[in-house]
Amino acid sequence: MQSRLPFTLSKTESFYDQLNDWIGDVFYDFLPEAGFELRDEQIYMAFQLEKAFKEKKVMFAEAGVGTGKTIVYLLYALCYARYTNRPAIIACADETLIEQLVKKEGDIAKLEQALGLTVDVRLAKSRDQYLCLNKLEASKYYDETGTFDSIYEDLPTFVHSGGSMKSFSPYGDRKNYSNLTDEQWNLISWDTLQDCFSCDKRHRCGQTLHREYYRSGGDLIICSQDFYMEHVWTKESRKREGQLPLLPESCCVVFDEGHLLEYACQKALTYKLTDKTLATLLEKIAGNDIREKTLYIIEEAIMLSQDFFSCLTNSSKDTIGSEKKTIIKSNEVLMTGNKLLKTLQSLEEELVFESELFVINDYDLKIVEEYLDQMTYSLSLFLGKTNGITWFEENQEERTLVIMPRLVKDIMKEEVFSQSKPYIFSSATLSENGSFEYIANSLGIDQYLSFTVNSPFDYEEKMAIFIPEFNRYNLEEKSAYALTKLSNASGGTLVLFSNQAELYFFKEYIKGKLACPVYFEGDAEISTLVSKFQNEQNSVLCAVHLWEGLDIPGKSLANVILFSLPFPPLDPVFAAKREEAEDPFLEVDLPYMLLRLRQGVGRLIRTSTDEGNVHILIENDLDQSIIFKIKGVLPV
Image 1 (cartoon, one colour):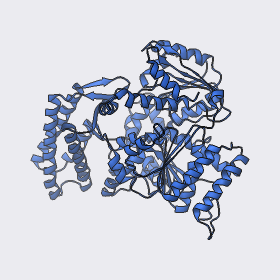
Image 2 (cartoon, rainbow, N blue to C red):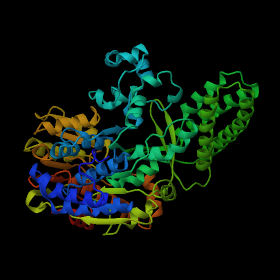
Image 3 (cartoon, rainbow, N blue to C red):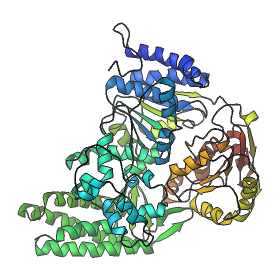
Image 4 (cartoon, helix red, strand yellow):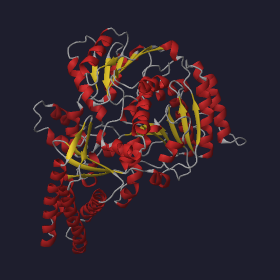
């Protein structure tokens, strides 16, 4: 252990005392000698963070833009992982920010070079970030471009031969197919309907192989918050099915952009019912030598499921700027849903008898029973007076009923924060009017440590903010303004949109009107687009999901255009939040918008030498009190 630590342990001093001394040397000597800026705010944060690791407590570490908070938590997580001989987990807001940490220009690479360290970093990406061999094989036959056929032919030899892999060689990651659009990737990526555990390609699958690889990680395992919460929620059920949990036991967890964790918790605890899943599973067991009565109930369940989802389609209405459709619980929806629920409950009883006849494979039966149990519970929530949030999603291939809990604090308190280990929340926006009670209460955290440290940057000198006004809903006016600024910009420009509809409109509007490279989220794998943007000083990056965490210093990002104020969508999730508020606008919409606004503006100044312009495009009928609040949260 001592040889792995970046300092030598002695018998006379504790690990924490020696860690404290080494941290001081790092920030006062080693990093400045390597060209890093000496920041008092960063050093203050470092010595505050020591308390959380020493006392194994939750800490809310609110540090302004430019504090260098990522380097601080990486140093502590690395040393603590090596001291405890268990990996530290870094849970980022999304998959995009994972790549930000591990890219060649990222903080981990900088620390390795500055301190002469070799850090064992392994990525635990969500399942939808991996190729599905079955979907690829099916898709290549109707792909006229030959794109999928080329991907299939370029797979590692052991995949085609069915042999074993002699040493770990990663493949199948979304990043490996960076030129595919999101639409193309969805045709060949992980299939929610695929029974991975019984798949005959399981031991050749890139997702399975990579999971085995990161589980043996020694220092840092980096994942998304969604994936971490999926691990928490599925841990026990995976053990019951004879599978390992998604993530190994960790020594500590860092939630980067921790203010977003509540929504990740809700997503992980969400029940999703799809019309295809039930039919696929039931048709699978119907092929066995089962009793005629059971077969009849299966056929009735499949038919009622189709009727139920058709009712949902007819009783749902679109939401502007969101894929989540609002469900109107008509009498027809409730009546059909109740028929389906009773039929599925009858099927559960019949499968008990079938299990005693041993005509169905044990594993297949267990999968069906688990899904039926989840579906009957979910349907009972939807049909009863549930306190959950429900919505409907529909695309060409699948219809999905989603049921999300309103409150997650009890589950989080028991399953996560009851453990005695350091949990670090890192973000520039964790408190509300100087208090951390809101986020603590929403996550079931009773005891915690906290601190706030402001940004070290002189924003008044380095940043110019412009707030032009436009007629409401006039996207053409806004697009014309943004095009003018892009045409005259010095350095790269990040254009942030509140929804996909705005981005699509702007994409069509500027087509062929700019000489510089313009990259749009969705046209390729996002971290590849970010890398191109960073390495081409006068390029443009247009995105919906890069309001947080994007860290590009220098002239590559010298301008930020916020195409509209980032108010929350009118979807069912925020509708539920508004229903519980006495003043929905002041308690839900405005705080969300101001937080996102601060995050978006924060993309511009990343070092003390950065400078540039921010353009915030607002509606000309906006209430003056809102404009006053906007100006109040801006750094200049």
